[in-house]
Amino acid sequence: MDFSLTDQSPERIDTPCLVIAVPAEGPRSGAAGILDEAMDGALQKLCASGDIDTGYRRTTLIHQPAGIAAQRLLVVGCGELGRLDRVRFDGLCMAAGQFLRKHAVTEACVSLHQLEVEDLDEPWRVRHAAVALDRANYVYTATKPPEDDAPHPLTAAVFAGGAELQPALDEARAIAAGYRRARELGNLPANICNPAYLAQQAQALAERHDAVEVETLGRAEMAELGMDALLGVAQGSENDPRLIVLHYRGADVDLPPVVLVGKGITFDSGGLSIKPREHMDQMKFDMCGAAAVIGAFEACVRLALPINLISVVAAAENMPDGKAYRPGDVITSMSGKTIEILNTDAEGRLVLCDALTYCERFEPAALIDVATLTGACVIALGHHASGLMSHHDDLAEELQAAGRAAVDRAWRLPIWDDYQEQLKTPFADMKNIGGMPAGSITAGCFLGRFTEDQRWAHLDIAGSAWKWGATEGATGRPVGLLVHFLMAHAGRATG
Image (cartoon, rainbow, N blue to C red):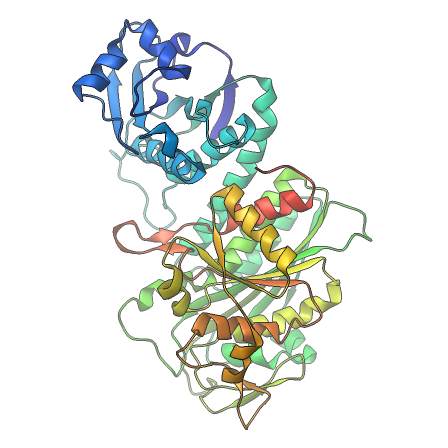
């Protein structure tokens, strides 16, 4: 979607559709107030009569509104102004985008960002409105082309405002591209998006950008490094694993990089500890951590952030086979620590532990892994927040602040030493599951054993990375959180 600006007064904007927000109190100020005056009070009358519903996220389309140049007027209710915060602002922007996605118009002019929201400045509001509109505009077409008579997505969105908002729109364009990349990779079926495909996508990204390099390790290279945990997960699959390493150099070579590590299980059958039939098809989404770190990487490159960034993808497929690893096996990780396998469906932490050990060589300023790791995190937090774990309070707060700025929130969970007892076994340095209690936390404790000398954080996105039910599909999260974290690391204000 193309983003641009106009400094015309709202009643003079000639557009297929003008989008405004009206609070429960009525169109008393801003664009809504200007339009109401140009329409001889028609907006106020329609609100008073109930023909325009100003309840939160309610949408009303007016055709050929008298007194203004727009061909249509889309009114989005924002409820009571006193309740309008950044989360509700995100919701009304998404509501507008979802309405337009299903409508015939392909261009619109948007003034939602002219609402006052908390203490957030207008650049934040226009950037967020643009990203939300683009996210709502997304439709998957890779293996299901749209019907001939299906509404076309928006191709252009014009935002009311002057040239001072252009940097914010440029940022929105990059962030939106990162979200789209992550969603497209996440939504692809596992017979297309396998470890080799992810490596191809990383290579294509490197070929498009001079500041990007990629290195891909196969079975032989990983075996030489002693990555038996990652290789153990992959040994039951016909699809060979990959360790994909993307480098972006936007700063002096001596500046320590931020390193993002993504779980890339392109399909998770559970291995010999096979999953139940119900919802197994959703296990194509088990690589959404990998998709997110690739999407965030692409957004960072497009933003030309003055940082060094490395995104590492531990890509494998977890399948049952005569060669598959078994419950009761003991595997030696790249770090030299031994792991007793009690459940082959707890495979994400195994591919990640070797990837995290590999990343020590980069001496990172921060090391963050992103994974659809545990169903327990969905039970704890639902689909609203990602789980966040870290021994480093400053890093945890930076990530939480980034999540608040992006409206892509994370909630911190403890990883106290008390939980380490659950990983003890007489047969190895640790076992790969800690039992039912605090399943997300013990998974984080497991990963923490491989990052003891690092400034590390873990994001469990099992609940936030994709939606279930009628709107099933990858969300692209936590691309927003990660990009805002990287922007803040680069010294750019993010709200």
